[in-house]
Image (cartoon, rainbow, N blue to C red; front, side, top):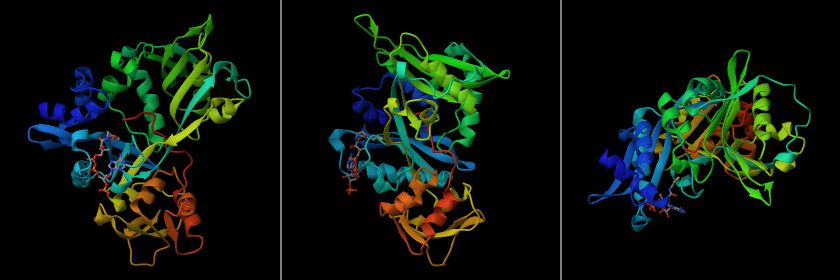
Amino acid sequence: MDELRAAVTPIGYYFGRATPNEDQFERLARVLPMERVHAAWDGSRAVGGAGAFPFTLTVPGGRVRAAGVTVVAVLPSHRRRGVLRSMMRAQLDACRENGESVAYLWATEDTIYGRFGYGLASLTIEIDLARDRSAYYAPAEPFGQTRLVPLAEAESLVAPVWERVAAVTPGMFARTSTWWQARALADPDWRRRGGGELQCAVLEAGGRPTAYALYRLNLAFDRGMQTGSLDVVEAMGDSPEATRAIWRFLLDVDWIAHIKAWLLPVDHPLLLLVAEPRRLRANVRDGLWVRLVDVGAALAARSYATPGSVVIEVADEFCPWNQGRWRVGPDGVERTNHPADLSCDVTALGCAYLGGLTWAQLGRSLRVAEFRPGALSRADALFRVDTAPWCPEIF
Ligand SMILES: CC(C)(COP(=O)(O)OP(=O)(O)OC[C@H]1O[C@@H](n2cnc3c(N)ncnc32)[C@H](O)[C@@H]1OP(=O)(O)O)[C@@H](O)C(=O)NCCC(=O)NCCS
């Protein structure tokens, strides 16, 4: 426990703390196995740390064991000496030994992880919608019944909804009960950042929960007029009707001027539900970064949308075991000596893996070389997904 505490001190430093907040540390220790944490030591002091949550990640058409990389930091007194590089080495080697074919993360800076083989794999949008401009394009039929639920009673209602959505949404991970209690449904003071308490609304239809929302009210008034916001922490439904209804609930809470949400997928239904999409003031930024630790196993774990195959020549300096030519398609993924259709760095595979970025995009950005005309289109037909990757939570 002392070593774990030391290993997370560097990330705590960047949040402005010399020693970890005890409550924060205790919650982290419940979900982050000690053996999945690396630290870099200078004498008895940990000057760098990096952890990996043992996740089950949804990929197109399946699920895969994946490392959710977290709490990465190196103290400013020891930066730019290769400490991060050595921790990334140890971490990816450990993932490979553990049989985790994918590692993925949220990056605080875009420049950090590309050199270790991570590619930008999803985009995410943030919205700030004025409540008085939040009408839907067409009035919605009432659907289900929404009730406010105390956090202590929420898990059994919201976890099945998350699980149904997570099972079919690339980028989402399976949450354990410990995760719900230690993180998603926890509302310690330090997480409020001056905002209101964490609230939970559950929508029931057909005798079962079908949608939920976790959110905070941040009240403010200017000369008697409301200026505050409702900040959506997480909201989802297991059907289009349920999603539409839970968002209508959020958009209609009184005393609120703005509804704010972030980490939404780029294909979120709200874009087409509201009458004035421009009023969402949607802002796009990078989402997940994905690293294929074991290219063969990772590519074999997802499904492909058409018959046929494509041969991809992969370069991977940091994990050279992945280098070479791979035939990829629904009949299997295997090493091959056949001439390559495409060639790219492993980062490009990370971009395309969850279906968040297309091969055509990669081609236009010169991140992949096409050796046969039509190979990029063929790869896009294979890798095509119906749902943009989405991870509703920064870990
Ligand atoms: C980002 C951070 C972990 C880098 O640690 P570090 O020990 O200085 O990194 P290294 O010395 O191993 O650097 C490895 C390489 O990455 C480069 N690099 C590292 N961080 C970089 C950054 N933020 N921007 C650009 N390049 C960076 C280094 O120049 C070096 O390049 P090279 O391989 O060409 O020599 C550290 O600066 C840090 O803790 N930052 C604040 C916390 C943070 O952002 N954590 C990440 C959370 S997702």
